[in-house]
Amino acid sequence: MSDGVDNEFANDALTSVTIGNSVTNIGAHVFGDCESLRSIVIPSCVESIGEETFKSCRGLTSIVFGGNAPNVGTNAFESVADDCTVRVPRGSTGWGVEIPDKWNEMRIKYSE
Image 1 (cartoon, rainbow, N blue to C red):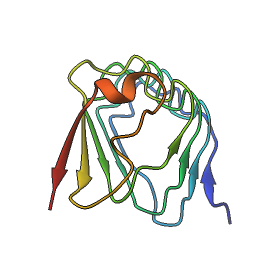
Image 2: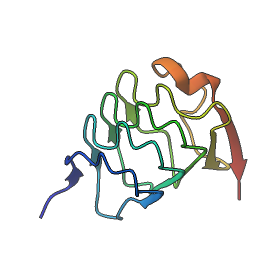
Image 3: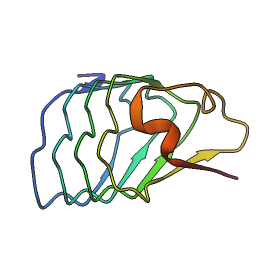
């Protein structure tokens, strides 16, 4: 059993992803260049996201996190859609810190 996602998914048919509740790490480059990826749900158990994990997912407009901000590798969200919105639970922590590249340019919305 693996506690991470480390395969690369260069798949134009992939439009949404929900990471499993047992995953603690999303490896580097895993979803890079999945241009049709529109949304991803990341549960609170994910502690880290590797470098360039979602790089060039130009269609990515919605990221929903289930908990606090994970550790994020360099350029993890580089070149996603300009209107990408990150939704996080109200009361979660770590979202105001500087995370490499694109992160601070994304809209972070708190939800119940």
